[in-house]
Length: 333
Image (cartoon, rainbow, N blue to C red; front, top):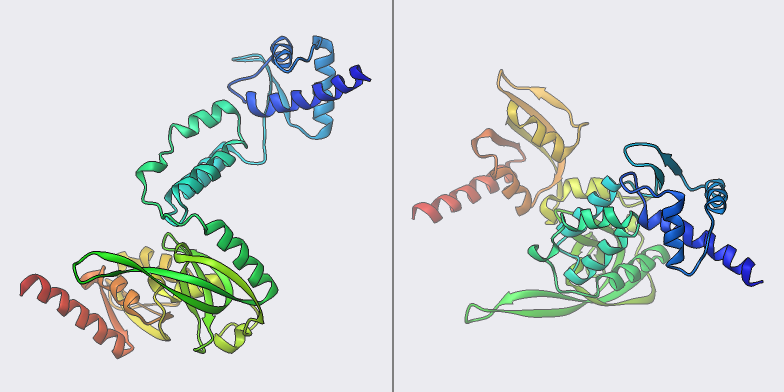
């Protein structure tokens, strides 16, 4: 029985060795694999290792025999490619709403999907401590409970905290309780948001997830999405994000803007490739679309200076002009 148990353990340990110890740059021959197994108190002959490799291949592991520049066997493919793990780790590093502690934990989980050598290579390229991170350690719990509430169409209650200035030009945390109907979680402008409805109003709102704590799922059913938005069947995250610039809410309106030709890429990136374009002279074009008219949209338009002009609605054009005049007075007054 002991020999049979050791045989089963040998196969499991061998699988683990291939996963964590080998890659294209670090193959192992049968003799080296036997040495690794000895670290687990497993004795194995080379012939039995060849048979075990075939068993692991039959199980689905992509074990390849390399001849040059280094000879031996290695695991050629995993659930994630090295480049995919690098992109995921970079995304977590750049995400301000994930705390430093949670970022390190999550990235270390990513590293378990590649070999130890590849993990060491990646870790040298990732530096979490030089990035601005939130302090809210409840984020995972909030996401879990909010996802559950969305799936069950239940209302939620939570504490929402933001910083406000005091009389001595310092700031303090100010918290309040909110009860909302949750509809979606979305990532925009390097922030993570909850899209919901405050029962006091008949529209959508969004709040930053890193400012949410003490989430409680309530027994009351959430309001139907169609009651508080233009979305009838399901929430459209792409459409909502495109319309709500910089995640400031506002009334959605039809807008027409005139742009210099060299702004084409910026306009397509922001509004999508399906927006109708119309030639307006040799060096300009016009576009029509829908967007949430807000201070966020005004500020976004101002970054292009004289290369862009709002034609419709007049209220948006006036808002851009007023903002530009205020900026001018700040620097010239």
